[in-house]
Image (cartoon, rainbow, N blue to C red; front, side, top):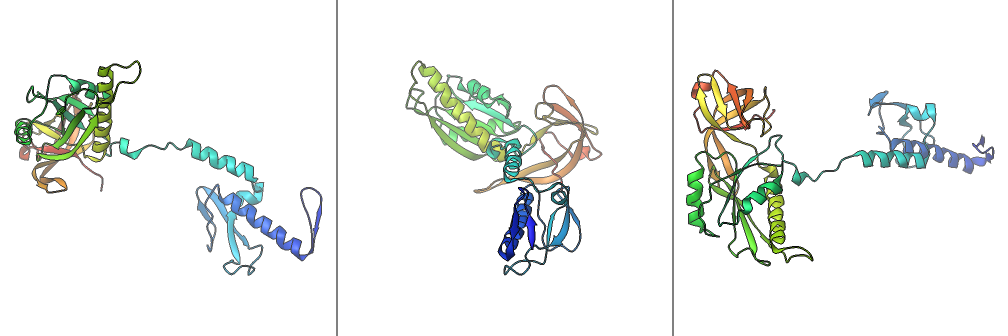
Length: 323
C-alpha cells in the first residue's frame, strides 16, 4: 500500500499503513471534542445539531474493544478534521463564554425574599446591614425590642411573638453582646417567624482597623460580612408572603413588584403549619390556588379566585411550583 501525505512524502509498508490508520482515528477523536461521539449506533442520528455518519473502523480487531463500525461527524469528512490547535481554541472559547456563578449566592426562588431586620442597642447597624445586602433581599426594618445590646433567649422569643403575626419572611436579629470595639464579636440570629424557630446563628469579629481606616469603618466591614453570610444562608430558603386582605374574589397579597411577582403567576395559599425539629417549618393545610392579576404599590399584588371565600388575612402564600 502507498499513501501520500499532505507534505508530498510517500508512506510505505504495513507498519506505516497501520500508523496512517491510527492517525485518521486520532483525528476523528479530536473532532469529537467539539461534539458528542455516538458509538455502536445502527443508523444516522442528529446529536448536538451535528450530523454523524457511520464508517468502517480503520483497524477493526486490532484492539480488544474495537468495533467494526464507528460514528464520526459528517462535517469532518466534508471539511476535514480541525487541527489540534484549532480544537483547543474552540474548547477554550466555549469555556470562557460560560458564566460560572457561585450557587450559594443565588437565591433558589425566582422571587426576592423579604427579610425583617431588628437590632438591639442604639448603633443602628441594621441600616448598614440593609445597604450591604443590596438587591439580593427585600429588607424591612422592624421596631427594636430593647435598647440593650443583648437579649436573653426568652426575651428574643417573646419579641418574635410580637412580630410574627404580620411578618412575611424570616427575621434577622442583630446584637452586640461583646460590644463593637475591635476584637469584639457581633452576633446574628436568623429566625423563621412562622415557628418561630432559629434557622441559624452566626458570629463575626470586628477587625482591627487597617492603615488609614477608622474603627467605625472596621465595624462596618464586619456588618458587611454578616450581610454576605445571611444572603448565602437564605439562598435555599423558599419565598413566602402573607394575605393582607380579602374582598370578594379579590385577595390582596403583601408581595408584588419589589419581590419579583408578575401578573399571570400562580400562588398557593396555606394556613398554619408545624415545626419539625431539626429540619424546619412544614406548611399546613392547602387552602386555595390564586392567579396574580395586577400589582400595586411598591410591593403589593391582587390575586383572584373563586376559592377566595376560603382565604383569610394572615394566610401564607408561596409561588406555585411547576410539576
